[in-house]
Image 1: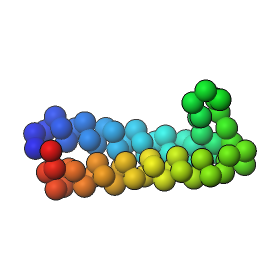
Image 2: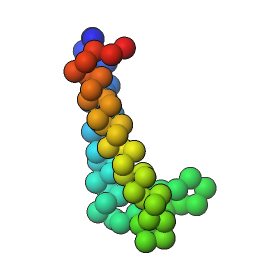
Image 3: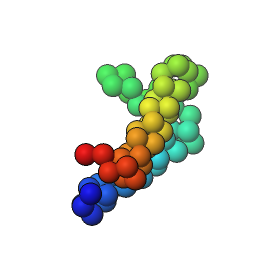
Image 4: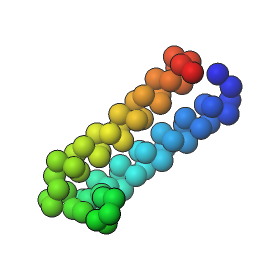
Length: 69
C-alpha cells in the first residue's frame, strides 16, 4: 500500500474520532434534514451514529494493517 493511501485512511480515522468526540461532548448529533438532535430526543439514532463512526475507524485501521485494496 502506498503512503498516500495510508495518509488518507489515517486522516479519515482522525476526523471520525474527532466528530464522535464532539458529538459525545455536546450530547447530540447532526441528523440529515432535521439539524442538530440531542441524545435524549433520538437515543437510538445517537447510539447508532457513534457506533458507526467507531466501526469506520476500526475498518480503516484494519485496511491499513491488512493491506486490503
